[in-house]
Length: 319
Image (tube, rainbow, N blue to C red; front, side):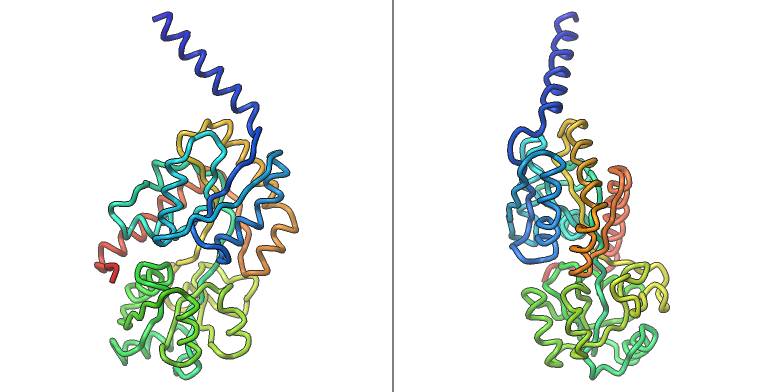
């Protein structure tokens, strides 16, 4: 009994010592996508100042593949010592787990949350030839033309595919899903009139909406985007409660000592409160978020429940 007590005290002291010394070398942020996208830009925006507040170099490591699930699994199975962070998103932490029953990670059991960092709305956009300018007009059009209006996505199971499926269920409409290999290809065909509508990241489509090549019908967040306040929400336009935004945040492997997770959380909040951070996010249409670990975990649990329910009720399959 005495030996067990001594061993427990020794391990506690060792963990406390490691937490006090943390960090004493470079820390990596895994981005589970290739460079250049929303998640990558978010991580690279946070990294310099986060390194300053933590007192260590932050290295962004892109581990793309399988819709972000490969890099996310790498982070889940990394050493729980605080030297591996993941820039998680609703795409990898709630959408993918709803679609892939045999993922190599559990978003709620395998990660310790710190704070949410950004929210990026999607926008329901249409080719100018589509005779609908509001959500109500579009729903009426879709009901008058069931299974005739085409809806692009960046691929089966992508966040815009799920947003479109959620919209169809909530509005009792039926659209034809046209999956592409990425948003870029979908946007090209959208502007060419080969496909009718697309639930795209506002940041990706903003320039095309401003130029008139595409028409914004509504954003998918519960509230209007401060960067495009003239675009109404789906929520206020006849589909109450509709929300299909992309949320990002920093998580660590679940067994990371709480003292280390708390250090990362405190440093991250300081970064998120910087005007330079908020301005950088604003340039690509992202709104800065900050939260407690408990609030972030609650968001993940609720969002996962929503997408699990959608997949179960609609029978969405990866085509």
